Image (cartoon, rainbow, N blue to C red; front, side):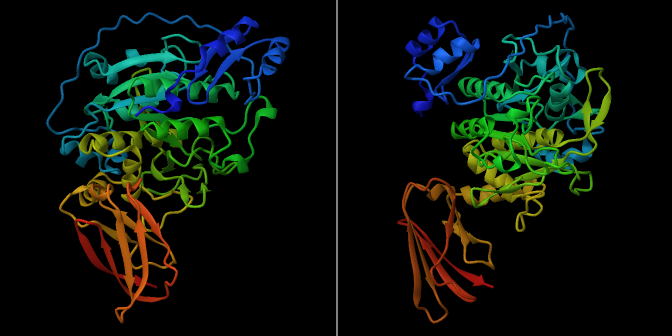
Length: 485
């Protein structure tokens, strides 16, 4: 479905700006603006145009060109075995139930993932990616920092992140989504830190949307910069201030699942999330060790918008096994290494349940977490699990299953959530509360279409005790007990 965000920036506006002498780097459909380069005099003229509203600080652009090396290495597909030997990556995969996911036949096939990072040094010459290239799973590359296709001559960070998701070398390292297809997009300039990199990410996300990407993996975060005047404050990690945060929410609004690192500031003065982990519609990932204990460096989250807990989930980010560009195994630490594990899990789940929306998938991943009943701002809903998520999805997408159920039950607050079976979202749902004497004490109607399968209910009279709750629509009903403690 098209929206105003899909319309291009007015070409006449762009032409007027060009005529004043500015260089247009990228137009942005989502923010209805442009990223441009101009001297101060020209910039002053541009800001006086009637259709122009400056939205961010002006930054210098780093356009230093590094010529790419030529890689003539012939790729050979690695022979797959019936039972996967994950090698050194066994623990980080099994923690999420990836072994069960693979046994069920879900390896990310036909899921398109954009990895947005600081570079993918020698990724096209790494043995663990031979099947990816041989099987044409690499869909394309682009460097949004230098406006060129080559992404293989800078920063090994993206190469290691990609290895966690997509490595395919049985007995050495195998990633959760080794059958997925990938776009490798460079948005981060590792030589400096300026807000322009947030805009690079915005443009890359728009590109990802235009080529049909399903999942964005972003192991990046922004809070303070080389120019201190650009720094954010911790309280500005509020889900609405940072450019990249707003861009991430826009990306999620298009239907893409956006998976981001929570940040590594837990032991620093900053302590909290880095953007875009504060975006309410992204899946922000914290780090745990191989015993599922929180990493001390993992950023401490917060409640966004009154009810959205950040971070959302956690995965292994201490001693995470990676493949380096030198074709040797290594380990690395950081929420940026936990993030691709969650991306891989999401790819397998979406392959298994392709009718889910991105936000439904996010919700099911959260609710499969190890502390789903007691989420907090350290690990969110905890470490998710493929099998538990699959069971939840089947329960709530089976047309023969009940219309919905109340959670948690028992409930200890004045708010309870109705989790609606996805097959019932297209019609009004009625809820009636009765006390133990059979008196109707509360009624509520949820109008259709219901935007998501979680509805928060706060009865006017909800004291400690036992209640009978009737949930029904035009086709079915369920009667259940609810305990208020």
